[in-house]
Amino acid sequence: MTDLWPQIESLIRREGRAIERPARYLNHEWGCTYKPEALYRFCMVYPDTYELGQANQAVRILCNQVNLVEGMAAERAFLPAAEMGDIMRREHIPAFSLESCAPLTEFDALGITLPHELCATNVLELLDLAGIPLRSEDRTLEHPLIMAGGPCAFNAEPYAPFFDLIQLGEGEEMLPECLRLHRQLKSQGASRQEILLAMAQIPGVYVPSLYTLLSDEEAQVQGAYVRPNYEGIPATITKRLYEGFAESSAYEPMIVPFTEVVHDRCNVEVLRGCSRGCRFCQAGMMYRPVRERSADNIVDAVCRGIADTGYDEVSLTSLSSTDHSQIEQILRRLNRCLEGRGISVSIPSQRLDSFGVEMAELVAGGKRGGLTFAPEAGTQRLRDVINKGVTEDDLFSAIDAAFAAGWRRCKLYFMIGLPTETDEDIKGIASLAQRAYDRAKAAVPENQRGNVRVSISVALFVPKAQTPFQWDGQISPEEARRRIGVLRSSIKYRAVDVNWHEPLESQVEALMSRGGRQVAQVVETAWRLGARYDAWTEHFSFQTWQDACQACGVDMAQVAQSSWDTDRVLPWSHLSAGLFDKFLRRERDKASRGVTTPDCTMGPCSACGVCMNYGVDVQTQEERHG
Image (cartoon, rainbow, N blue to C red):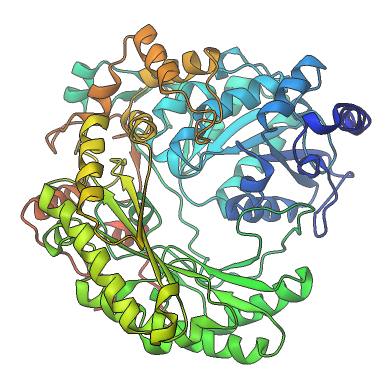
């Protein structure tokens, strides 16, 4: 393979201060795997900078899985920062991998994760920088196979023309299976069409080019927006589930970066899935069922990870780590093992109803930075609508425990624009935050009350595919700003800070999360007009997206803000997270009536369909579900 390092090194030296954080582009970090002898080469790509992508657990897990396959090598690539990309274009240097500093065009396959909606133009920026045609239809056997996966794959249509295949669900088994088949077919001289047809028969794999796109009128009659063109490929693509997760080792070899990255610590995944059933939460729906790893497995992984990397902090990761049935045992054992070594254990997401006095002491360790809780809504009525499953008393008990245990800062996450929300719900956020501040002050010694801080972070509700709220529209940016104004005017305490997400960015997110295939042309047009790094405030241009929508004849507000009947066929109806459609409809109906659904790990089965469809069950280390 071509080694671009001499050119990259020369460029970095020559450009000097024009290139920010040159360590982003250095290879051979501690713990990386380099297999130059492998004949089949795969590159895992994160469509943003190294600092964000290197912290992504999917990149680490999937690279490790592919590197376990004999004769295969997995490398990593990240999108160069904006100024570096511009310089590389000027110098005619293509996008490259990190391990071998090789052009991405020289790999057999690329896997691009889609972590959030605002990464869409970054995908095109990366493909173009690599010298790879943007659209699948323009590629030949000379180009790498371009694959996608990740959360945004559950509405794949806005990305569909840009990928040869899209993987739904968990990739530990699916990705190596795809790569083995690709390697075999390439060695046999198969045509590109033969390769794609074979890939489409792997469970969980969607090959958009093998389906005919239907009109909206046809879709409402046929029950889907696409129709397969060949026998043997599925009309509905259902996510893959890694059924061996609970028994698999929690230890994953980690790379220690040369430069600081987000979440720069040893990360150990303790469980997968969440059955709390928040009706806005795509992750909670698509990662079902709950599968817990054992305490022995987790403690061993932490000890090995710390020994291998030298990190002084370990994070027990999942959608809701305090929900692990053995979390108190795990924390006690880790605190004993790590005592006196200056190593802290953190849990990134704390459930209000799981965070009592004992949990506060166990999580505290030697560092007490800030805690984060997510009530999501300001009134109990609206928390019942979204099925949050927590109360004010849960929040106040958690605040009491945390501040008595030594914390002095707390952030509360809320959403505005949730279905059925009123101004009274908005004012309820202010009331709840101020009363939380009062509880926090009361829980600490009088001479430390001046250090107490409570902040509010407010995001605009974005309706997501595969959730009970997928039929609900987003409020307009103007209405969002009005509601933020109501909230700000309702906050009377200076010690309670209010931060909010830009509503215009959230409208583009909703365009991507709800749009069909026509939005792909908007993405390409926006990119050609200069859109990239849309998740970065300094790069985001709403006007560019507006211009792209106008040029493509797409009404952004209509896509983002329309509410639909629950019997409407949606652009992602041919893609399934394994949930029964009737479950999602039932949950939407219960939301309209303010009726809650209990967590199935602690109560009866909610008949969501996942366990029945996959022939599995919730896997907890302690039997708690009925």
